[in-house]
Length: 466
Image (tube, rainbow, N blue to C red):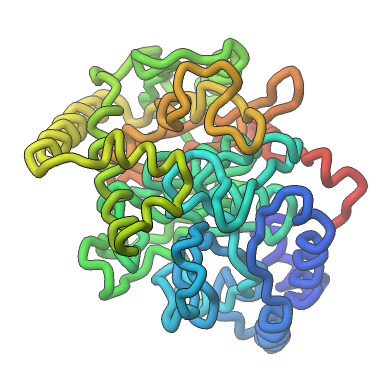
């Protein structure tokens, strides 16, 4: 499978055209999507028409930019003009098609990307696995019987199987990083506001948009495309003035990196911890100063639940009386358990979040980056809320290292760093201080230059080409 960087080089040389790349991606969807249910809407005619336009631009030497001609899927949580906006819910099945593009979709279209279709999401992107009343269950490239994670699991499965070399997802508590860890792909949650969001997420300022790719280089390329102004997001950050790809060769020499296997409160499968230490050794050999130390924080899950499920309750409420009877039963339970809070409780949770941000800000005055496992476990069976015998069915109970950095709005990257004895991927999380997106990407690139985990091919692709 070619990544975006390789695909662009092939377009420049003329050895591959956008039409050929698009046909290959559509063929992968046709051949494999029934096994994993990654793509829930496919539009081959419009995709091929866009690819033909891109091919003419490349032939004339006038591509629109680094997205031109790249086959791309988007999560069905983003508006795309002319396409349904189902969000994994039966509540939306009678809604009209969208009449405008979300900012990420607008930037991709402007850059000449070939939009293939939409990826599966759990209902309203509420949880860390991907199954929904509307779209069903999404499986994993490393075994269709395994979950791809969530809530951007459809995108991760699509990228992992070559149904386009990249996609864009959302991350409100780990939703691009969890599936990246479970599928052996790369995902980046940038600093909040780096990528404009519209419509506003029901989860408020917890929710980020982020690239999902096979390499850190591709994530930086996509971030440069997406991190552009859009007046519809009043909280978006101003452009940095420098391309994020410019940070990729900065390396890690001399960087102070904190290694925290559990953030002081988690528990890992031993194979996860072993892979984390091995990854830290790679970065130390590259010149980083690695110190094992936990940030001075406690698990902020209660505050996260209050903020997250208050948002979920609000979005379901908007569909009127009786709507809660028609949603994912586990979402209904979670809203009733956590989402019925008053203003005082909401402000208390916000206060906890603000304190956490201060604590992590102080931590990063001593350490440039923080390494953790992305997940304490590897992928478990698809269609389940949690691993067999787990202490809780709530997704936050098995994803303790992702949601803290939505509360603090810090950039966090997941890259593959190994596999369990039975072949399930393991992810490394690299976290930076707010606004330090470039340093995080540079460290991820330094790690990938020295390892080959991201080059491993899922069993479903045995014998496949392209």
